Image (cartoon, rainbow, N blue to C red):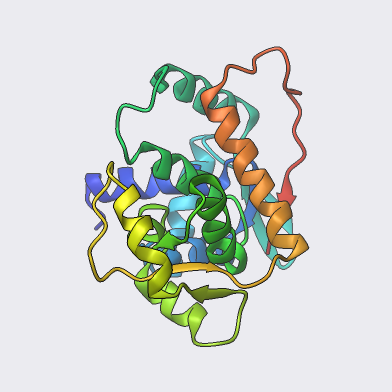
Length: 221
């Protein structure tokens, strides 16, 4: 039987994953595994149906799948909760990474690493360290699997990293921590990165009365 603590963690992660988009059970299972939560499909199915019965989630038949999404009232509640928890300044040095992690969870898993590397590199004007990828939700296994095949992310040369490490004073970067950078700019990565950066801005600013209340959602398999 799932413990209360595990239920709360799974509940929170499901709400985060479904914020702003719709996912099937298979899609949710893949996303959860990517962040280290590996629940059996039957357990996940039962839990999703329980959340549906409690009207925390909406279930839609899209044969052969069932699609889950947040109802409007839950989305508004999360939005209000997010506003209450915001402070004028980022008091925790790692908070910016937590915000980026929440935004990256909204995009397709296949693009999460290049978009994460791109965003961190653009924000901080230097390569993105492995420690930072961990903070934004990229597991070591996910990174290793991604780097096994040619991609647009490559490991940065050591000659570029000495000054970058010296400039980082708010978080601890291990002396042997590798760093990564974008080999080439891809239109899709830049588009998704812009969405993440826009989400980061919206998290820090009060946009009430400016943002449309009905938002278009993206259906992922």
